[in-house]
Length: 116
Image (cartoon, rainbow, N blue to C red; front, side, top):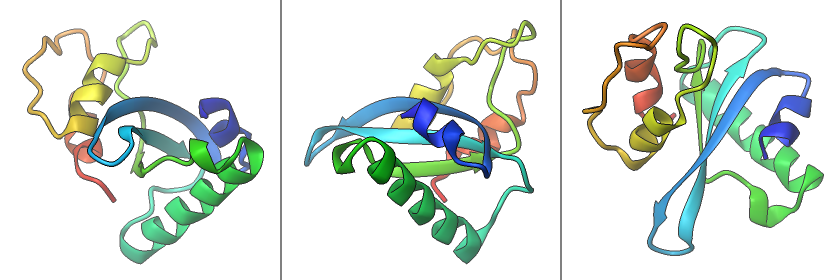
């Protein structure tokens, strides 16, 4: 799913995690960094729907992310590794209680916390 998202010309970087879902058991949540500026409001909703359709076309309808959240970057360690455990917590709506001392940009957690 990440590869399909990054194949879109608008997307610079993407990370995908799962979260529990009452209907399907597990839902796909995508965190996306665009090549352009981060969208807000109706623009974000429109772009999220376009990216869902893109993933559906590239892989199939079952792979469409339930949530797509846009950020200026992804939570990474100083060495550049994406901190997926933090993304999983954000996707579940949990408070971040893990150690974030190695995080390159702690402010990104607030930006990615709320669904678009």
